[in-house]
Image 1 (cartoon, rainbow, N blue to C red):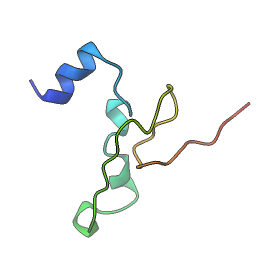
Image 2: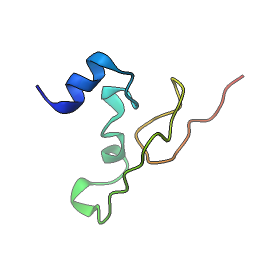
Image 3: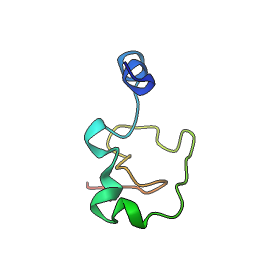
Length: 60
C-alpha cells in the first residue's frame, strides 16, 4: 500500500485522487521541466484541483 493511500485512510488529503494528475490534461508529461511541491496550500474541500497553488473559481 502506498504512503499516500495510507495517509488518505487517516487524514484528509487534497486534491482528490482523480485530480492528482490533472496537470497531465494540460501538458504532456514528457514536456514537463519543473515540478513544484508545496506544503498545506489548501485548507478546505473543493479548493485543490491538481495545479500547484491554483484555486478553482468561487461560485456563489
